[in-house]
Image 1 (cartoon, helix red, strand yellow):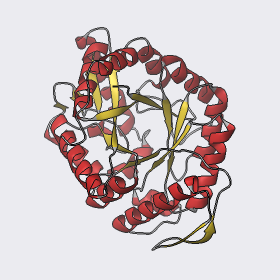
Image 2: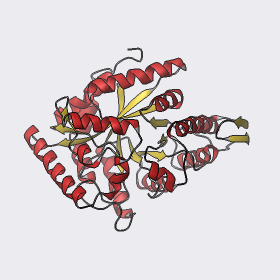
Image 3: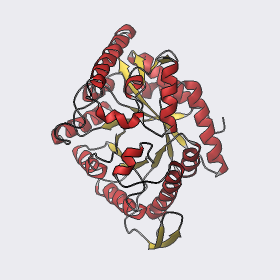
Length: 363
């Protein structure tokens, strides 16, 4: 079965092991262009553009990425609550049509870092934020698709005669692990994004979301986010993992990773679960590694799969067997890893997925 392979682009050269998130210019245009083109040349389908209350605007970054590439698609992370869904719909549809159509998607992040929420003026509680996200997604989809004006009156939004002359088929991605998140995502999302957790826990999460989606008469697909660490030999891959861990530990101790502090104070259920799993043991399912997660806190997808290209591809395909059809992979050496994966991991993952079917929706 065909799969979708996602990467992630940033506007400057930075990861847990090098560079700075807060020091120096926040945008390096030549680097962004090189990063985007590396993904396209490596055979990626789409790249995620992240969101943060102090980060460059994702829509502008997406426009730059789309202009720099020919086929690469974008997934724009967006936090509902600050821009009306009708406005976001027009922005998405306009960007989509200006770049040939079919290249734009949106990822809804409701937010688990209270400090980051408040920097943008959001003081809603956890469950209320997810109700707002659900209503946002409902109005967004309707604005993107409705040929006629419509009215809407809900808990968080009210519109009269809402209408967009520019429309597009924009996939709605979503992430979250709490009961409130599951209800929202199962009801409104096209793709439910998961962090890299052990296989057993991932199977449970997929079953839970599918059950909730079925209550609303819907089917939903799943994405998994991990950080591959590959080398020519398995021993070499684990040696590289230890070097990454040592570099990260040094930077955490020296305060170079100040961006991770909010993650340590996260109210997100998924973040807490990753921390618990990492505290239990550093390696799950033979090669799912929590070495960096344990140091920085799970402020993003920080769990890694360690091994050769073939071993990591097979590990990812075990998630495919559970029903995952989209994979988001990003590296600790961002551009170099993308280039490396294009010659091994990416084609191996596609070839392997073509030979097997994911678990059925009703499984």
